[in-house]
Image 1: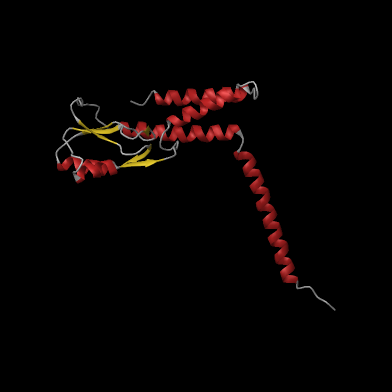
Image 2: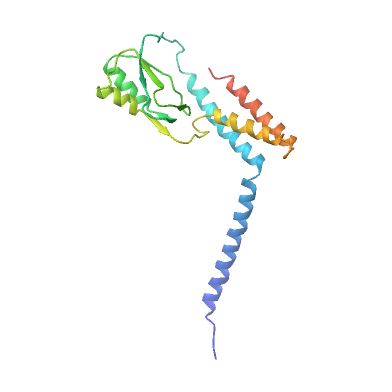
Length: 193
């Protein structure tokens, strides 16, 4: 007397199979992501890509420097990691006063309130709008990323090696892998000016 709707049962079986497959994929991918070898490999590849980009960008740069001892400095008004520097904006501002600049802080560096972040050959007063525009060209963040600061990769790989050699973990294979990654990153870093 009672007939089950066949199409809805078929849909339920298809969706159940899809959900089961998605769940198995999720468990597999999570178990792969938390393995230390995959984590170290991801850290290494990210830092290597960042270093390679920096080395490539240095090829076109002129290596002549100016003496900046008597230049005027601009200090930061807040603490944080320097996430990015808008070089185009700073360049346009400097062209207005026919000035030169030396950026003291680098991407990924943690600067404290009151630290000098840039020196300019011409004076920009605190009340001057150009002074504020130069300061606003520095973007701050409260977290650091390897994509911005490749030095963080050295720190993280060193921590992995030290923890792997601790008596509680005692995993010399992981420590050797970390040392190999560090060696390759240091060899790449030696090519950077």
